Length: 430
Image (cartoon, rainbow, N blue to C red; front, side, top):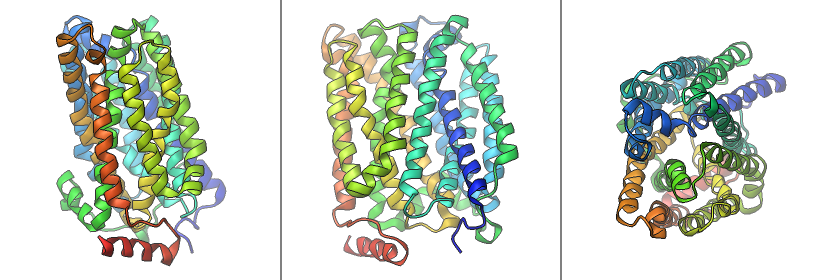
């Protein structure tokens, strides 16, 4: 009997839909606030918009810091008590927290709200574990790609709505995001089934349910542990765009909040198409190894291109190839998760989320510091605007080296016993 045989196709499809909607709404919740977030930070910190960049970096960083701390805990709890209760609590908590930020009277409450969002935002860990539970070896890469597609769709809807809601004030997007999350909780309460049967659950161990314990577990993967480094560096590179896009486009090209929202919606469309429709295709045709290499080469050239672009409309042309960076994560997760027992998938995805959150802790203040420093020292030079993206290109190149180091002996995934032999061979050759 397969790990998901107890679930009918209809039940599994409904559950998968809920998982993808959850990820999508989490993405909407992030994207919907981006166009107005600088204004809200400026309002609650009582500083001019141009001086809010540093605050923006730290406020975004606190969200990631809490994810970093709590993702291993959330993942291990889902391995012990099942995916369903952990997911539902996370979705409900996220909805309530958006209300806290909607009513935030000052910067302290906004930061507190982002911190709590980071705790509940760790639901991505359990969602990824659920996807692994209900996937076959043949559909794992495709389904992990669907996670990226759902996130991309959320980034289509979120920034577009956020841009339109700016006419109703900088707080309105938080109220709408809260409604989305709470409605999704109601939907999940009635349709979500458990994917991890009691017989497959394992004892909860606190020493494994924290970031340090989670990182120690990486040693079990031997040579594949460098893939976690690649994940960290790729996330660090992408954060150059995530965290400076608002200020970069508004100051260099004089874009409005709506322009920012629409451009991020276009990013979401491209990422949704690539990860939802092409991620599985790339891994079937090229294999996981070549897919990851192709995605990283693309990131390097895109980051250099963004740093040098002279006209705003050219960003739309660069976004198209940039969307292919979205095939890296599904390829890497497929390789690592294929060699991990089902009752440790929550822990594994918690490690991935912690690593990405660690990047999100470092990235926002790091890139905003680079941007503010170079803008002040070279206000009229192209690299004054483009320095964060040049740094991201260097980081991507380093990730490329680690990827080669990890997969130089990797021949590709097979299934069942052959797959286990492939992993043992890779580890022994290292």
